[in-house]
Image (cartoon, rainbow, N blue to C red; front, side, top):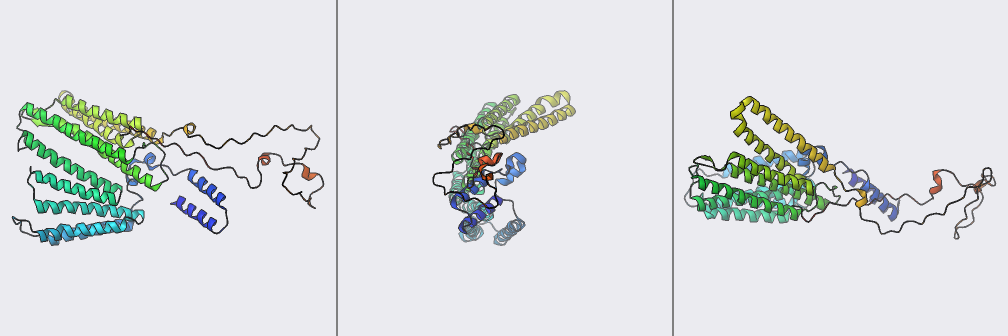
Length: 454
């Protein structure tokens, strides 16, 4: 905010004629290259998480959200019918779900082009509208537990979230779209499992069927995790360890890319964890050590991507997967041999060690910048070097510099004694002339780009 106020003052000075255009450009360049505010990612992960959603929430905004939540709850309480008829009542469902969906969609359309706080409120409104769209289709179609109609309802919800995301690109609408996609993936996998392994989802399965379901679970969710990673790459291809952009549009795209990478990493960890925990008649479908090795492998891949491409968002899922795998190994193989006391000590060391290593990696990656020598070279030719001047012997007057050809002859001042004007000033002032100011423009650091960034 301080930078914007300074730029507004510079524009006002230029409009009032106090400074010319060249001076205004130098001042703007000096303001943009002056010590930027430290990135929230380097200070505190909680501050970084809050910065994803824009400026801090004000008291008025907070009470507005809480009040809107109470009004929405009152609407659903008053619109709820005690009976549950066999056929859906279109009028009642429209009053309960369609009216709030349209109302919040209109609120989002009004606030999406306002201030950052209004833009955030528009994202919240579009998210609530998407939830009500899902409730409307769920009430109208009434799909069964393993009904393909449930996939259709989730697909319609994805279309609604995608439309709101196109109308208002923000972190909240991006999260809403990702949530709708996860809903679609969940209901589709549940239907697919029912078709392949039977209509009931119980633990009474033969070992071969349980093993097949474990591998199917891993493969299904890893495919969705890769898809989310490609979506994040399409949103923002620049590494998170690059300098923050001064362009608001680029900064918003970077936030959406980071949150999408985070969801992709968490989905990958969930994929192998859910597959490792699939059980049958004889307990787990996969041996505990084999499932934990799979979790460690996926965590290692996420950590390698985070370090190689500067994708800080993958660091948290990698640390979470490491904790899950080591905790499961501790539970399965240490508790029975050493007792609960030693296992608790090992678990504490696992948590402390993983947190310390993850924090150190985060700090190193957040502070990593490209060296200035890799900045693109300037096209301006270097200034011509001045010929060396020979110093006169001690005691003799210095020769006066020849005046420019187009300069008028200087009038001697009455307060200046004769001969004193022939001696130029000594010291650093020799290199400073009236009207010349040192350039404050510095080559902007080269942003980290990679076509292979997930």
